[in-house]
Image (tube, rainbow, N blue to C red):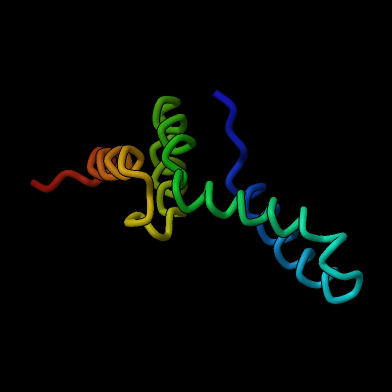
Length: 100
């Protein structure tokens, strides 16, 4: 499955939204609306899908610390799509330290 690195996604969101807004003041909205739309689409994909897929791929490769760090990059788990929210909590539970 096709995945985009989360840091690249954050960079695309920032560059498209901030760059589109700045350029809209300079050039007008007619030339920069595509950047704003792309930034909003990437932001919506981050808010709805989160980092669940890339964290589960890291978990399959037995990179537990990397998977936990990647899963912690989902800042708003309540906004996730219902299925991804369930997988988010399943992964959080499987990465939780065992109590004795």
